[in-house]
Structures are given as C-alpha cells and as structure tokens.
Image (cartoon, rainbow, N blue to C red; front, side, top):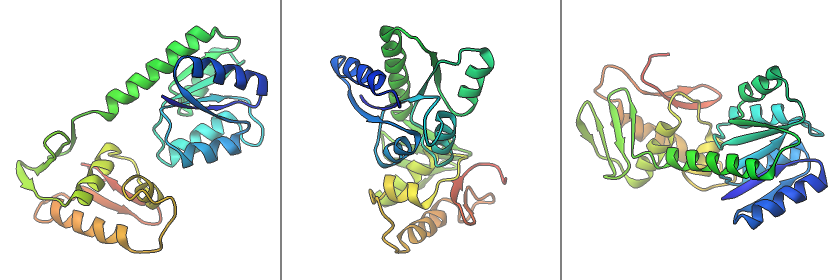
Length: 226
C-alpha cells in the first residue's frame, strides 16, 4: 500500500516510515498540515496517518478539508489526547480510526492494513445503484428502470465516478483529476459537454432527474429531489 504520514515529530515520522517500509508498504512523509494537504490532494494513497497536533494546520482541520473536497481515503488519527470526547471529535471530523500515543507499532500496522483492506473492498464493489439507475462494473453495462443505457467509455467512467460518490457534491477539479487524469484545469468545456450528454442519456424521458448541477460547486447524483 501507499501510505502518507503527516507527523511533525521527525523522529516519530522516521520510525513509522521505516516500520511500514519493512512491512512492505511505501510511504511519504509530510511535516505539517499544509504540506500534508498538498500531498493528500496531489497523490493517490491507500491510507493516511495523521497526527492530531500539527503546525500550520491541525490534524482535524486537515481531515475535515480533505473530506470536504471528496477525498474518501481511509484515515488513521494519531493523538496523545485519549479521552472519549477527543476520540469522538477525531472520528466526527472524518477519521476512520483513532489510535492514542504511545502505541505499539504492531497494533498500528494491523489497523492500517485493516483500513486498507476495507478500502479495497469498497473500490471493488461491482454494482452501483442510485434509485432505478444501475451500473455494473463487471459487465460494463448501465440500465435505468431496466432499460439499457448506451454510454461511450468516458461517459461510463464519468458516471461510475459520480455514482461511487452518490449524494456527495463532486467538483470540477475532482472530475478532471479522476476521470480525465488532468492535474490542472485546461480551461475547456469538456466537463460541461460530457455532463450534458450523460444527463441526456440517463435522465431524458424519466420523470425524476438523478444528475443535478450544484451552482458554483459541481455536480451530484442522487435519487431524491433534494
């Protein structure tokens, strides 16, 4: 797995990185919350390990910001704060697990690998459903109300990404990076064109639209009228 460690204690970060590398994983290290944000939004990781007390941007703020831009990567929060309220805050901010310091490395490794397995299982989910719209990743087919919807490869990839994040606002940046593999905005209307075509294929002729534009934010696919 590829793991990002966001830890301002250089010795602790090196210890973690070395242990994870010896266990067969690759790691990147960020020394503060701002660098951690840059790394996490510019690269694909299987798991993030984020210390709660960080300079420039604290761990909970970092986690909250990553969730707000649609990053669903599993996050393990590390903290010396061990009270129940502290753990609850960490999980409510968007953390998937919370481990208090000092910790045993074997426990941390087990938790990280469990988070990685959980993410892999989610990523390999074969069928996505939003209302009466069904996308089958294995057969590469899409149906709505059991009627087959014919999509071009890019349209299929776009719909797959939207349905994977059903109910969440997906930004143009997220689509450019994850559907078109652009890490910059080419200043074209490519997204608008594909969204329009996709909407025409999955919504036209049906009473309830599923694909919605959130003005100034992006797009969301959902079954409710919301």
